[in-house]
Image (cartoon, rainbow, N blue to C red; front, side, top):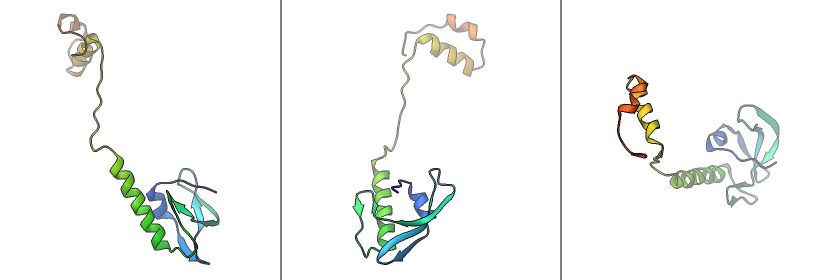
Length: 113
């Protein structure tokens, strides 16, 4: 069975070196809550495939490297820009300031400002 999961899920697995392969006695279900018993072999982490004789330390290092690469790809700061009609801006401003919302007609301004 092929499973994809976050590094936190990997930290909850109990891995052991057996027969020159890295094996797990159980995996976590799709929601990473309950254990599914069986004999599972770790053959790859991302693009890194493991041949016979790989150790749990090598698998853990591959997981850390993959996590580092994923974090490096994420944007550091994200900004959302809303382009809305001026009536929506006026109404939202008055509601936020707890003023009478019927007063929005007294405000000037153009759209998207």
